[in-house]
Image (tube, rainbow, N blue to C red; front, side):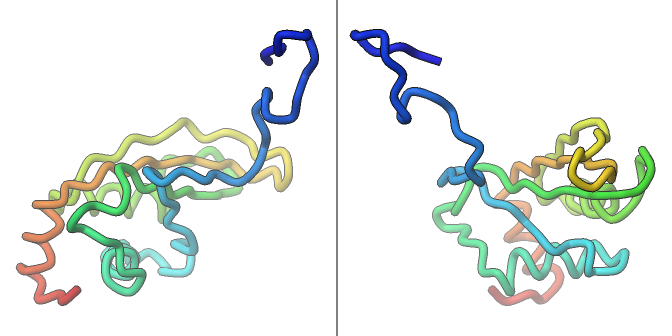
Length: 129
């Protein structure tokens, strides 16, 4: 927290808990509905959602996985592995941590897209954007 010159706190002087609004980071949501098919989740994000590549829309794409246990497998890990194996970028992830709202274990993934790799992948797979 910062104090202004008169040692008063103002609303603009502290961090809020609003949803993330950053032009350099976007969220890929709904991935749990792809039922273990990471390729379709990635195709949906890159094609159906129309992720802009020229110039890139964002520096990073965030996605999460929720599970009942602290497992290191599941849909988030499958998508991360697919991204890496296909040369679509790099992925870093957090350790699973308990969501206090649901008691699920949440893992956060940060995908840094490789634009040239995505274009090559799309061409190889006959994917039109």
